Length: 302
Image (cartoon, rainbow, N blue to C red; front, side, top):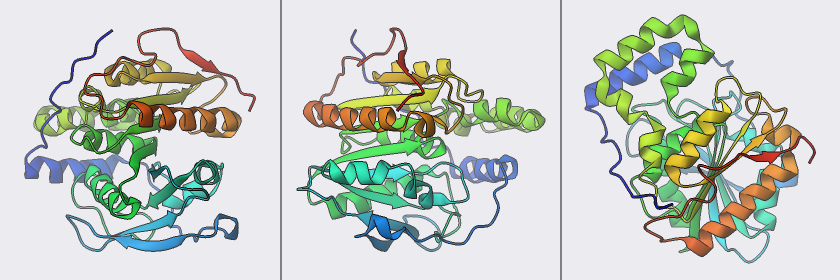
């Protein structure tokens, strides 16, 4: 099956983006304040740094983890909507596995998290800033993105407008922020309807499916849990189909739980995706890895 490239949605007018961000913050899950958490000693060597931003006050707090072996690529890890920010990746083994496979790793705090400055504009701007930093530090190596939940969601708009990223791995990513909110926080449904009707350009821009159709990646894989009630298996299949990518459903897993109960399988899938992406990078039209077929199932073992 051939997937023809499409033009991604244009960025909405500034007033829609600013108002949309205010509504998003008003409706987003409240997170407890958490002090900035340093990486543990077992992740040494690493370097904390500040990433300049194209918009907003202050920089993005980040940590650079050099590859253990001769480097073959560099990976940007994008955290979910949790109070720990980039410290979310201190656990579950993604960073050590990537470094052992020869990848440099960059983690960043989204605006408003950790030590990063406050948000101004949609969070895809921060993803773009972080990718520029990754490119500066990687010295011509292949670039990759591994995004979890909201981190992967905001990466979609950026990956749709660049051909500098070879491949991507996504966990628990919703096709649309407000569709996720509709199920996760039904009390806000009048506000979601207001958003859709009053801010139509912003609403369209937030549709990850439209961005996924414009991807030019060597490979991309989506993973989610069979028991996830807000990012449902059918959502994962739809995004994978739009992106021309593969998808796997982890049995027995809820939201953000796939990496917990099928840790080795998820990490193995990610490494295989990056390797396949490097082999196929710069391909303008992709043949889907597994979209449109039956689910690739991952058991809760490993």
